Length: 443
Image 1 (tube, rainbow, N blue to C red):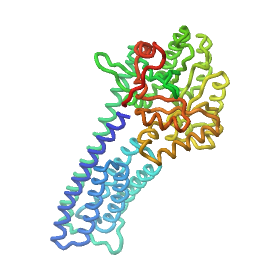
Image 2 (cartoon, rainbow, N blue to C red):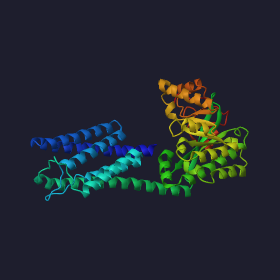
Image 3 (cartoon, rainbow, N blue to C red):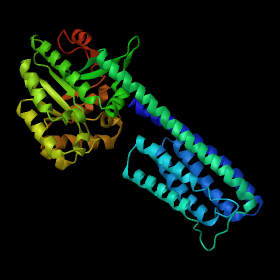
Image 4 (cartoon, rainbow, N blue to C red):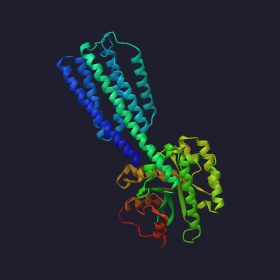
């Protein structure tokens, strides 16, 4: 998603720059200690330099997660050793190296906001506990070799200034990110009030390229500006808790489209796929609301597809299965979106009352040239046939991808090769003739 990619890009550049600066500064100190023949300190500086430049190299290769974990593990160990061996408090100067543990904890928190994991939480906790330990004790190992007081007097001031500056920089970066998200959340709330949202429709076709339905895709049109992709604002809407309200709006607008289609012989058999967020689906009255809306508008339930993501499987599977079962019993098609990228296991998939699965575009892209991707696709189709589910291949952009999926027995397709998402009037106009305009020969 573009917004998350932009955040990661900014974080990657900032962290890469910081790692490079730390490496250069530490290398300078290492040369000083080597000149003084303080070899243990020089060795410690070498360890810092190697960690810093390795992290910088990993960020340059877009391996940010690996760089962050490497630096956190390594610097945590280095700081602990340095505190025990060299930065021993005395009457002349206090211990200050442990202040950098707070910087590591802040770095870990920023990374956790970007990509949460239990390992990251454990690292944050370990950094904070180590800080409390060193701040509360004067512990040193028996064979410690403290830095001379004449250096530590100045070093204490310098290290404290550097550590506090790094903390301020991290807090400033967090404040900027939070402020940006807050501004977007306010804009989203205003967009709901000002009716700035709009549905686009992307065609879904059969193996012959004939139109069978469409997927409703949310767009945000800023006043006086262009359209904003949901990839940019959906993460903010999820954090702000707006998804149930936005999802209800999408569903209601989709129902209006189905009513419109039912009035025309040429479109009355088309299906419409509607995405449902986790927060929306888990509302207590979600099933009742959907069924009541369909009944009030006299919509054929078999014309509606609800697309749910695999990430829902991280919640109460039993409750999810119950809700899916009630929707399926009413005739609504349940589709599992982005299949292969989420949390569902084969055991979950077997018990879910799902009609179809949508293969994530990441499996389709590059498949004609990748034997591994082809084997994965074939396995997905084998699983679907075993479980009596249909398969929709999305992200089709080339003729080669289309032909390959056809060879696996796929009969439902979606992607730029067949048509880009369009507002309803443009969608109707493009597909009004015979439901099957000529397929593009290029992506």
